[in-house]
Image 1 (cartoon, rainbow, N blue to C red):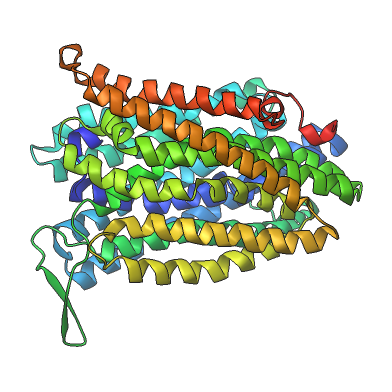
Image 2 (image 1 turned 90 degrees about the horizontal axis):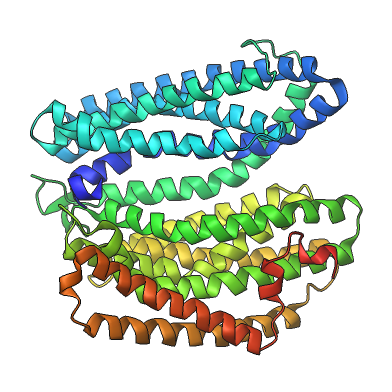
Length: 517
């Protein structure tokens, strides 16, 4: 997408159009629904047998189709109303509205796919659900390379081909997962019957989790709205008017795409390391909470926070030092040039500063969830959403900051979220969480991270100074990224072992370290 459309207003419009279906995918498909459905469904499957479990599945799927279809109609009507009221709203706004309308149906299919993937997880089948996202990636590539050009020569028309391929992807995903369900013995029919005690139990659990996770997700949604409203589109005047005052647009085309590209990159280590760590720790947390064993729960959370800092701090520093060459290696092709790399890397650096908080945030959230407390994280997030918006609309006007404001505000609010959460969680657990031990580990991690930073910076400066043009642009870019990266990892682990840190050994265990410490 960056290669063909560049980091410009067309890519901005596509990212905006994908906001709504992606929001509901993360809310319903992979967020609150999965969190409440899996434990209830597993309980019914184990206690009442498959027939009762399939009946519950049919009712959940039927209710989901009904609710999502109603939401889809509202989104489509809302898009039409905005288009009519704004009389198109200019080229960029019109394309944003059009792509939103085209891709909105994706949320129905992708949420059903996520529900069926949860069923397969309960049945200990993981391969097909893990491979299904590849379908979406392939269809987006086909849309950009093959289908889009069929719509005409202009890229603002071609991007509609990508939007249609996104819809086709959800249909293909459903056609692939349904036969797998049948082979696993799953048999159900859509039902609108809501007279079900387990369904009501899920409903009572669903709302608090939805609100708690939804606040964080809507924060991203609000960021995108602010970014879009304050970006000058093609053909727009240089300023907009509020109460008779002319105000210059603070952002230029490509701002939302620069933020989106930076988010993709910081979410990579977050998804690979932080989510894996939190997922592995959560069963241990839940076990100790169920046994009311608060000392061991405090120890488990403390050790998980140490691990989160251990992997989060160097991850953030690497993004800070190697952000520019990483963006260039991955994206600097076709319509995506050096200037676009610089914009995305500038945003990425600020997200990198918050990586440690992002990692710890997933741990403290699991700490509350294992205590069946979904309201406290929700209220913390609600207050911080307000602060996040205030920071964005304040910082965005500074010439040296611009779209980087979204990285700055996210990092600041995440650190505050972790600080407040740890303080409240400590009170809930009724004792100390080993602050001195965590601080001692963090200092050692900082020392190892500084060593990694010097290694990355030195090797990057060295490889940049070499005459490697004969090897080709991509090979040179790979050398300038992976050689410093490998040196940084080696230096980090070497210093960590020399300081006799336990965390490297914990990362290699098959159980949570608190289970045998």
